[in-house]
Every structure is written in C-alpha cells, then in structure tokens.
Amino acid sequence: MQTDNGPAARLAVGPSFVGGDFSAILPHNRATDTLIEMHPHITCFRATLQRVIVVALVSSLGSLNARAAPWKEKAPPALRWAEGEPGCTFSRGDDGKYRYALWTSGYGVIVAVDSQELEKVHRRVEPFFSLELTVRYRGKDNLELAPGSATLEFVRHYKVVQSSLDPESFAQKTQNDADERDHEAQREIEKHPERKEEREKFLQTYQKEVTEFLDFLTKRTLTSMTLDPVNPEANGWLLFSVNSKWIGGWKKPEEFVLRLPLAGRMLEFPFSLPAAQGDLILRKRPE
Image (tube, rainbow, N blue to C red):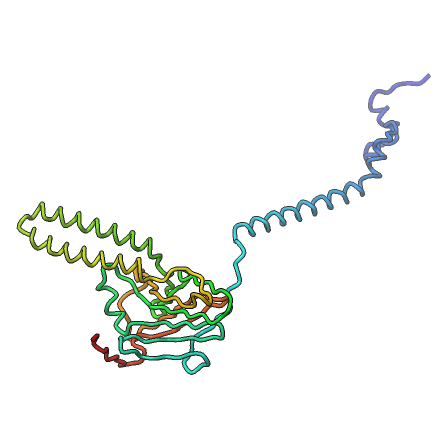
C-alpha cells in the first residue's frame, strides 16, 4: 500500500527545482523553440533598424542646417587699383579732386574724390560721403553697371563697410526730415513770437538747400544702366552714409576702400584723404 506523506514527500521525490529546469514538468512548446531559433535574426534586425534610424536623423539634421545656413555665393575675383601697376593712374585736378583711374581692355573706371570731402560731410543738409564715378565702355557687347552694389570701407574706423545709398530712399528721408524741421520751427514761433523773423529766415535758407539737394539726388547720382557701343559712358555720384556708432571723428589721414562689382570682378580702389601727408590742391577759380 502506497503511503502519501504529504507535500514534503511529494517535493522530495519530484523533479529538482533548484536548477530551474522545468522541461521535465512542462509540456513541449514549438513556438518557444521557434523564438529561440529566431533570436539571433531578431537581434541583427534590431541593430540594422537602429543604424537606419541614426542615418535618417543625421540626414534630417543636415537638411535643416542647409536650410538654416544658405549657400554662400563665391566672391568674384578682385581687381585692385595700385599706383604704378599697368592700367592704374592717379592725378590731381584744378577742380580740387583726386582721380584714381583703372583701365582694362574692355572698360575704364575713374573715381574722383574731393580733397575737401571730409570738411564738407557735416555741412550738408544730410551728412554723407560722396564720390564721383565715371565708367567708359570699350567693348562691342553690353556692360551692366550696378552702382547700388558699391560699398565703401572706412578702414580706420573698425573697417566699417557702408553700402551706397539709394537716391530715391535718401530723397524721401531728406524730405521727411525737412518737414519735421519746418514743424519744429512753427512750434517754436508759436512759443516765442519774438523769434518769428529769425526762424522764418532760417527756414527759407534751409528749404532752398533742401530743394537744391533733392535736385542733385534726382539728376546727378549714378543709377543702374547698361553700357554699349552706342551709349559707352556713364557718370554720376555715389553717396555713403556716415551715421554709425563706429565712425567717430576723422583721422589724419583717413583711409578708404571703394568696391564696385563690374564685369564679373570686384574692382577695389584704396585711397586716402589727403592723398599724401600735407597734400594741398590749389583750386582754379571758375571763369
């Protein structure tokens, strides 16, 4: 007769649980075998998937960086004026201007700078630095001139670079400033009637200067144009703002670099005011 000694006896005679071997008491499961066989393949697939995700993220970041930092156009080759170099000339005129000329087989560019430009800057209705530019075309096709792309570097003022002023926008600003000046004068006359004659005389002089300056901006500044054998020459003024916290009192001497894109190259005209230490131009009186 078999005697059941309770749970302790059944554990004693049953399979060992110490090693965790349940194969003897669990039914055989084919799905488990399949998963075990597929484990190396699953691991390989997971590693491949991770690599794909990393590559995709890197590519996305690269695209974002490309959009955030647009491609920079390569700067055109420079053609720099230098005294004594072929095609480069310098002269002092009876009109008080220094002239720097740069000639190539296809065109010539002459930059005229008033020897007293620094003294005149702040005497004008609106402060600005001016240069007179003449371009003469020698070719048989076309030459595009874009003075709006010209810049002036103030070398001794932290190398500040100012773009050429747009004549129309500058004219509008001048007119707005003139209107505000007129309103201020009228308010002052209302508060101080005894100064009416003085302020009205000032306004007449000021308005005359503004009218003459607006006429200058309209007729004598250089604008974009196309030169060809029929119209081979352009002449006019380039204006540059001097309003910058980095441009202080004038140095002695001052140094500048005018840059003008033309025919696929960047023309550079370095110059000083005065052109030489102690230089003085004796102006010829107009007849």
